[in-house]
Structures are given as structure tokens and as C-alpha cells.
Length: 98
Length: 113
Image (cartoon, rainbow over all chains, first blue to last red):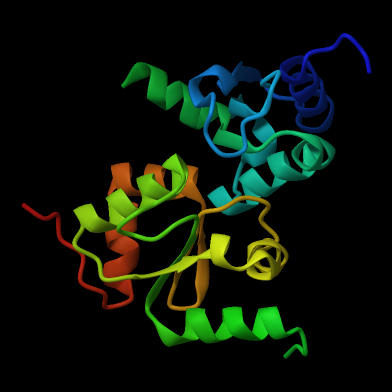
């Protein structure tokens, strides 16, 4: 067991596999304390916002599958819930100016 | 198509109703916030849907993940096609795409109230 937090590990995996232009990983576990899927020690519920050129031209389902694929081991191991928001750089820019 | 009995059951479910939500708990009593969020979006549009409680059947709970190649629940199907999970349905609801998708399949969807 390394000292790396699960959030850091998720971030590393996504950096490696999707080369995001922007990436935010938030550990939301404390908000779910006591709910189903929560465990002692937390690190079970995460929120990911990822902006990547790799999403260009892909459906929402295809994009989110790429994220899930990158995090397969983490999802099997202890991550119970993962909220995902995927954007292309163009979508991200449009959102920021609107 | 398959001799996996769980996949057969899933095929029957998604073929048997226009809108099917595989969820934790029931539409009246969801047992997970993400399932509840999708129920809320559908209810807001006054959409009739069938809720399938995966907590009642561990085989189904795992089976639907393999069937859709999607590791999380809830999962929404419209006319036999996978639409997405909670994040996607929520985004589509907010942008109006969910209503459009339902209309394109001839399914009534109007904001209620």
C-alpha cells in the first residue's frame, strides 16, 4: 500500500491515458459517510471533471467509457461512485465565455 | 443472441417498455442518490418508465454492467438503447436533449407542474 491517495491515483491514471488539457478530481466521500458503498477510511466517492482533445467527435457514452476504462482497477478495488463530466477544449471554452 | 439467462431477462425488460431504468431501489423509494436523480429527471418530464431494482437480484446487478459495458448504476434505456448513467442523463435533462430524445421516439415528455 503506497502513500498515494486514491484521488492522486485517479488523477495519475487519467493524465497517463487521456492527456487532459484540464483535470479536476474531487474526493466527495465525506459527503456520503454512512451511505451504502461508503467504507471506513473513505476514498469511495469521487467527482471528475476532465477536458481532453481525445473526446472530440465522441458521444457522451464513448467519452465516459474512456474514463471508466482508465480507472477499471480503481473501480473494482474501492471506488464505489464516480461522477464524471467530460468536455472537449472547445466545449470548455464555450462554457467559460457564456 | 445469447444463452446467458440474465442477458435474456435484460433483453426482455428493455424490449418490454419504452423507457427502462435499472436502479438501486424503486422509483418510489430509491436507495441511492444517483438513482434518485434520474428518477427525478424522468418524473419532472412526466415520463412513464419502468424501474428495475437491481438490489433485488445480485445476478442482475452484475449482469447489467456487463450487458451495457458500463460499470455503474443507474442505467437508462430508451426503446432498447442505452442512453447513459446519472451524469449523462442529468446533463441531457438540463440541456433539453433528454426531452428531444424521448420525443424523437414518440414518447410523451413535458415538464410537469
